[in-house]
Image (cartoon, rainbow, N blue to C red; front, top):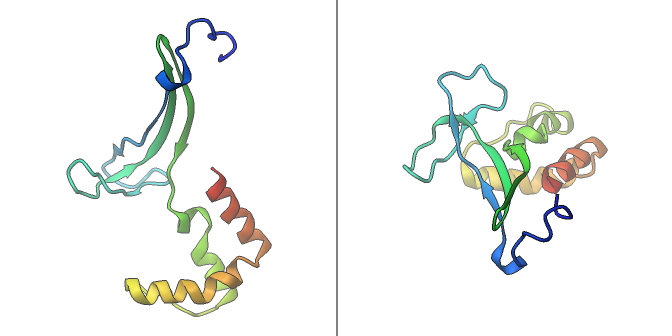
Length: 126
């Protein structure tokens, strides 16, 4: 598309890649990847999908680039499953400070697991 529109596109400094993460609220959790996401518009955490879209805009040229569904890191990497695999019976703390200390203790072991490494890299490369 970029080659086909070269003559009508604006210069790079007048073009933009727009990212949008508009929430799609739902009533109920029957769909996959529904979660409570922060809505900065009204400081709430509605039950919603969080699709991330990207669009290229350069004068009259406008087209979508990608669509991804935001998923929390712990879900995308199946973190709790791997914690139980390497630390059976150990509970993940719920308080922020204790959870941070727990992460420091278990993360090096999780990152040595080849299957977890793949999920971890995939999450950060998206």
